[in-house]
Each structure stands twice: as C-alpha cells, then as structure tokens.
Image (tube, one colour):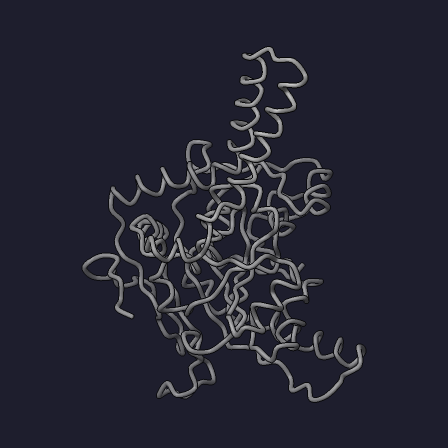
Length: 366
C-alpha cells in the first residue's frame, strides 16, 4: 500500500528518546486549514453526543405543538417517526463497503486531526534483536491492541484506528466500541464504516476467531470518571482502570493472541470535565453510557490542542493452554498475564514520561 502523505515531509521530533526506541510515525506541522477542519468536525462528531438528543427532542416537540392533531394522527406520526428513526439507525449506507468505496479513511479531515495532535508513535524495543529481527510488526501479526487511557472522549483509540496513515504503525485493526455509541447516528455511521466491533463478548469472540486484530480501551466509560478532579486525586496522577478489567486478557488466552500495551501520553488532557455528584458515575456504569459534563476550547466540544505520543510496549504473549483447562487454572493464567501487562504498562510510562515533560506524573492502576 502506498504511503499517504500528510504533508511534503514530516516534522522531525524535537524530543530525545531513551535507548531502545524505534520511531514508527513522526508528527507533521499543523496548518491553519487543519485547525479549522478539526474545530468544525469536532463540533459535528463529538458535539453530536451533546446536541443530538436536544435537537431531536426540540424538533419533535415543535412539530407536535405546531400541528394540534388528534390522537389518531398522533399515533400515525409516532409510527412514522419510529420508522424514520429505524432507517437512520440501520440504514444500508452504514455498511463498511460504503465507507471503503468513499475512501473514508483517507479523507483530508483525518490527516488534519493527526497534524493537530502532533501524532507520533514510538515502539520500545528493549530486549529485541538490534538488527530488527525480533521486532513485533503489527502489520502482519494478529493481536489485541490495548490503548490506554480512554480519556473523556476516546481520541487515542479513534485516531489509531481511523486514519489510513496510522496503519503504518498499528496495522489494520477493528476498534471495540461501547454498544451505547449506536444511539448517536453520526458517530455510529463513522464507526460502522470503520468496521468497529461491539463490546459484547460474542462480537469480540467472532472477530478474533476470524483472524482479525482488535483494539480496545479496557478502562471504558468508567475510566472517564477516574483521576483529577475526582475527590482524593492529585493533578499529577494518571489513572488506568485495570485492576478488575481482565476480560481482554481472557480473550487473548482463549484465542492465543498477544496483547500489545500502548500508553498514549496526552489523551487525558484533550478535554476537561466538571466533577458531578457520585450518582452520575453510578448511573453511567449501570447504563453503560457516559453522563459527564466536559468541555474544550472556549467551553465548546472542541479539544484543546495536545500532543499525542503513543508508546508501544513489549507484546505480552499468552501461555500455551493445551487441552481442556479447569476454571481455577485458567484464572491463575489470566491473573499472571494481567500482572505482566500492568507491569509493562507502568514500565513504559515511567521510561518515557520525562521526554514528554511529565517528570512529576505517576501512573496508578485502579
């Protein structure tokens, strides 16, 4: 596949990385056009999570009041609205082939996003053959990419999966997304064109069984509520909600697929959020949908300009599980692999935080 140029030439990183670091993608200089495209697309895509429900409600209410109709007509209107909503939600235009035909992943707007966040991907090669023979190449190996943290909005996972340019570092993978994303038509269309996988166990199993690589932000929606300004946290704390998140490890063992730890520096700083009463966090976890007040530039759903540095750690390979294994042994293997994953994540965070300018930061597994 030909390399899709973001700009005539990349902007050489001004950061000096520790030994055993391989740079996979370097940032490109941002332009005024990029800034405008990011702002407009963010208002449309990210903002739809906020304004979409209000626009739909206001339109229906206004229509209802304008035509002071009887109950029989009301029922017909309700049925018509339901059918229209159904067409919007499951329309054939959402098929992945449509996105491919449109060249969706190669649109200029996604390249603008990469430039806006100074998108950079590096790989820690500690312990690998210095000649490159042992480097784990995601472009031709099935894997589970575990991209941490989730952030207020999952930019880290989205920008690793969406632009075609990112495939040079991460290979082709399907992002695992929350079922609740289907409630937002614009977001759902983008994810459908991308070939995303629903976060249900059956859907993920099917994708891995078909030999596909998948990407996941294991902290999910609950991780949005962790870290500052949550009571008891400090601005220098970065949190990864992993202590009881072992489903992706279990999947890796079941399918014999390695897990790649990826920490994205800057992902938690693209939006700020207001600390709401604990009940909102509880309801969000129960309904698996975010009830979170967040804001970006000028108080709008436009992210602050933040450099995103993806650091790819050493792959965590699953143990050989020959034959039938009882639940107790399987759980021991899951716990052991999960601990290796957490240790590797902390190691790459501590190794690269200085060159990102986060010397005082610490990563907590919660």
